Image 1 (cartoon, rainbow, N blue to C red):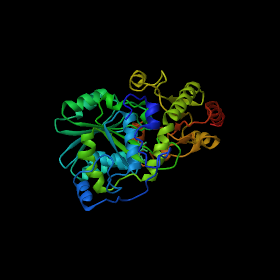
Image 2 (spheres, protein in one colour):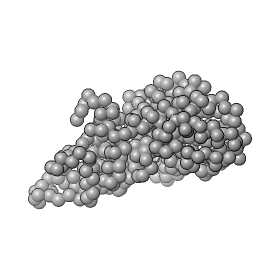
Image 3 (cartoon, rainbow, N blue to C red):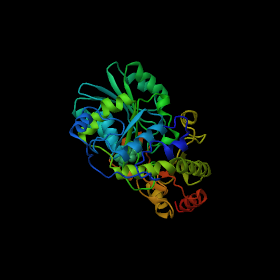
Image 4 (tube, rainbow, N blue to C red):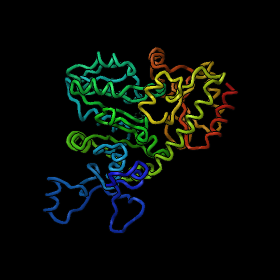
Length: 393
Ligand SMILES: *Cc1c(COP(=O)(O)O)cnc(C)c1O
């Protein structure tokens, strides 16, 4: 459907399935299973079900399928499978591909639960994992071996916004026949070029920018039709990570406005990071498209825009950072991101609390670091709020 549509059009129309009532808004087919006209039809559907034939909501559902088709069209992927959360998507993408004896190379800077899967769960099932500093291309080259089955990474790290040169890593992985699995939340589906740069499988937590209004958990795995239907679907349909039809409807509505929201948030994030760059109370402002970002050229090459996230390092450590957090009036203190509401997070005491001081230092998570997720409020109000809070630092 709509092969030549640009993203904004695809986000509103792609994948739509209308019932005999001709509803304008996508319907929520809140049903667990489906009835058959005859015993013969039931038998035929269990042998092979067609595009618009469903059996059981753990396997697929029309509302969920609309969401999968629409987000796959946006990413430029052949197919997708939606899941109950971002972590269900990451887990299924990895577990569906790996078996005992396989070798995985993973970036060290990962979302906490992703790190738990690769560091704690995979080794329990006989998968060997080598961790590398994702920004070091030579380290990837040393770690990837002829028996490496999967390479796993987040294109932009949380919360220090370091980039991994996906094109280089994908070439190294493909040279040994390894699959490249990318968790692409921070790049957002709007600025993603992951498939073009060589990713084989792209995973999103749709809890973030896709819902974007703080309501539902969700995830999606995107890839070739062959991978999604022959490798991932059998794993997911039997292990039960399916997205609910209600959630899929919320995510479909999220997709309609995704481009508008992400571009508005990004415009404010760019302006705010530039305005704060030389602030006397800040040791550092991290934003991928700021010329001072250590990987500025790579950030420009990999992403059309700098994205919706920035991080600031408040001089004076944790006490000063807490004063700033507590003085903010528009920004809310939470650990979500990509939301319409602007959110601030203190990684050292929340999302990365579990790590040792040494691990945090290695990842660049200093006591004064605040992660900032820019929302869709007026950017001038957001900047004013940050400036008045920094006065209290
Ligand atoms: C939030 C997030 C996840 C997990 O997603 P959930 O929907 O919370 O399960 C995984 N990876 C990254 C990079 C995230 O930001």
